[in-house]
Image 1: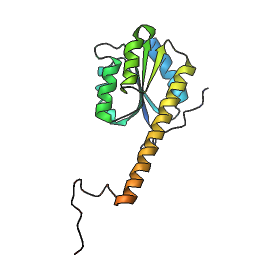
Image 2 (image 1 turned 120 degrees about the horizontal axis):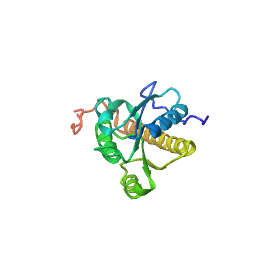
Image 3 (image 1 turned 180 degrees about the horizontal axis):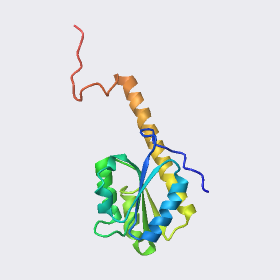
Image 4 (image 1 turned 120 degrees about the vertical axis):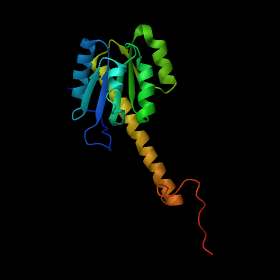
Length: 170
């Protein structure tokens, strides 16, 4: 069994991963792989972007793994909608070799975090999951460090009103 990725989001004790793939056999296989790689995570799998978005709990998603080829909305549109609703999150886009160009554009445009060519092995998917979760952990650490630095320089910025004029002692 592959080692678990090193990152569990701090904001939840049981993070949620979404897997969205139209083909049931591939979806079931990928779900089994992800369940092994992400012990303790809640796994949700869907056959379409609409089914995933219809749940209404995008804010709870800590990882999105999606196929590019989906009925109606494709994986790139799903990635954009989920990120717009939930904020930035690690997204792995899976696509066949025929669909490499749009998948790589999505990575370049930072719509998705990583691309995995289908068919893939468990090791390839495990490596992609570890990579995007580690990058997410580093980004969260940098944001916390930056916030702490700003708080030290300017006081606690979370409690100050934006654009507030500081009061002066007279």
